[in-house]
Image (cartoon, rainbow, N blue to C red; front, side, top):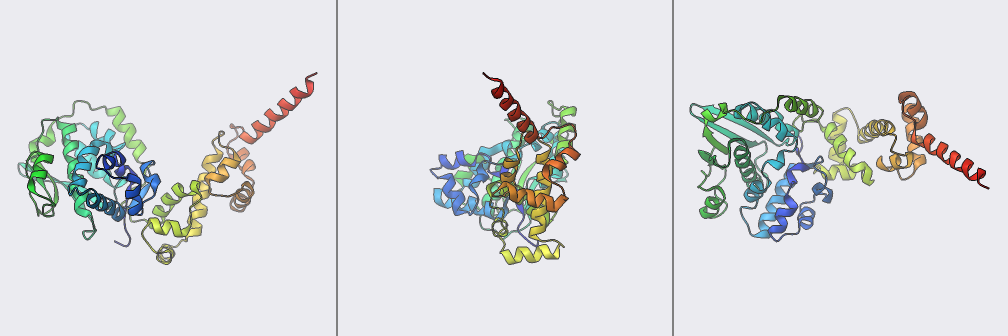
Length: 359
């Protein structure tokens, strides 16, 4: 692959609480892994997968707990799937639910694939990472198995047990720790990491299926950008949308988030037929038009959200993009929506008139 893929910051749900229970400072752990602190607050952001693995590796070393990733996965459980959980829970059967997981996993993780292989009476639900030489990857694989166990418990009941748990790597600590976590010993140095269970369980119905909710969730998730497309410009746009309000949307910051040098990022964007400045302008244009449709966002607020230090800088840029002022654009494209600035000015005029009438 040409550059490090991403995972959603949703993968860190519950991390702060669990890390604290392990005697760690979550903020310090993120800093050591070169991850932004806001990763714990915004679950729709993206982070480089190799830094996610590095975070798990740092945490297991700092806590002295070799099973940090596995135990974090069991702690996170189905919460790690976000809105995808609605698709999974509202499928008709267990097999349909796992199909939804396989088809939509790239919305949240561009570094790994979920699959399930049927071999007679045994089915293997596997987690396969595309890049196998990452420090901390065994932690991430064990975390995925922990989450998988919790998912199938949610679908099949707390009494469900896998036929086997497979781990691609050797044991990270003594076997007793794994027995305590899973209730039995996994198979180590397996051909993949994942879970095995009876094929007959795929046809079991899910009693809570809601067809209408399932369809609504499908429509919503069609709007999300997948992380597996290998589309470098789309990754940059996603990062820009999250960095602009903080005023840190520089090429240096974006390159750092992507674990690339600035020159490498610019060179690869050139090969894609674009540039950082072009993507920055396009992202700002798209965000500006959406903000202008919202009557509750003022022009000053909008300027800050788009990363401008002052309102005049935003207005000049907008005029350059669209050859009209923001207010004129708003009048043309949102005829039924009165701009907040006009409402405010009329309200102020009304207030001045009222004050003038006061004896």
